[in-house]
Image (cartoon, rainbow, N blue to C red; front, side, top):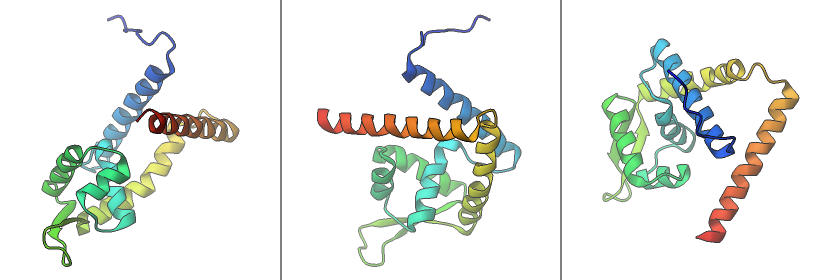
Length: 152
């Protein structure tokens, strides 16, 4: 089957394509390692791992995602046993999302594995090329965020 080449050199499509490849490879890797998680769910776990218990709104704000998307991810991770949702002891109307023991174990394992995965995926780049790529991606992200702020 012929591959569709609709990107015609557009950077946006190339970045999206790279994102899809990385996510597919990472999801396969996590599955092979016995970690029942999708790459798209990891940021939610990591926010809670780093910030501690927080509301779904806090998670959405931190990840720049809509609350309904975070709700779906939290529900899925809760069903898998990685998260617990409990009432806030100070504000009974508010619910806090916390890592379960299994979720804490998973975030620790992911933290260790992601560094190795990054090294393997980008092993064809020199240290200098990785630094340049990192700087360029940061520049693009900053530009997009500033442009978005101007246009909103």
